[in-house]
Image 1 (cartoon, one colour):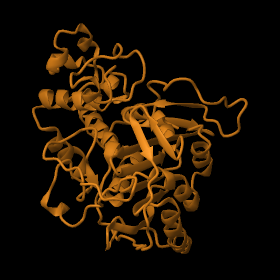
Image 2 (image 1 turned 60 degrees about the vertical axis):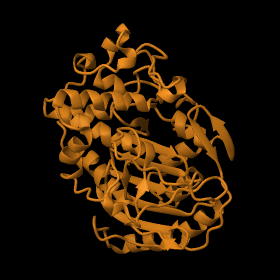
Image 3 (image 1 turned 90 degrees about the horizontal axis):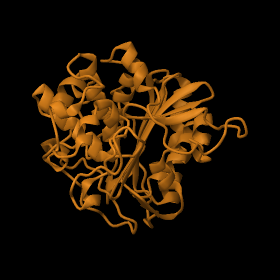
Image 4 (image 1 turned 30 degrees about the horizontal axis):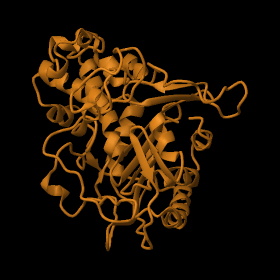
Length: 384
């Protein structure tokens, strides 16, 4: 389990570095199971049984954990076999598969994919020094800026804080680039600005051209759009009060993308298939670039312990029982999201919620889905 997700699950009332998760008290009764026709879920009898199981189980999970709504898309063998939306996107308004969620840090894998597709096209190199095209004015006199590369940024090794607001709104190095893992949204923003400067196009335009359009992600945007109206899942705080949704007219490579579970599933399938990447780069994406600190267990002594875990290019990478998993989560004020991909079996799930309580329903929903249970239990036990 990543440092960020361990923080989310640490306790029912937890405050940790870069992560605040307080389980809220919110009353919820209504559930609105729904399935979307695009991408079309498999309609085999076994999948009908899965839908019935989810329709019976998810409303109770939401009620138990005081989460107002969730949107889910589940993939097996590279095909979406289940989509469902439950609860309310706002008071009195049922959630549907068209409900838009701020996916918070699930933005980062999308942005990483844009950069990797540029690398595959030969327009950017993973290991080129970024200072030749972009230097943030705050570090213009620091020679360590010359060590920054796209690979270092994608694997969270820039040495930057998560956000410069944590360092008096001045971008600084907490450690030398490439020295160690350190989760950083600033690193992704730095990388996107470098890409803009080198390629000569706005980053959100590149995302539209290289990823969103070819992957048919028509319900995904980096900036506020007119079609957001009446579709946003309103965030909720720890007391169940509505929080004003965060919207932006300026792209953010690390946060604040709005999308649906269906659209994000399209992206995950593209990752499974290696769309837009050379085979070598697709393999590199799933290779651990840096370990995240001291291992939490030893596979020699603990059943279900991963053989290896760390950060790859845009995703956390976990090697478990001979299979490779990519995973990421996200949290903003009143928002929690989660996604994983089993690269080996081409399965995976995306779970989007509009609640600070969202992390508490991830494992129960994954267990209810009944897929990749070794991985799910590994996460539940705090080993992944």
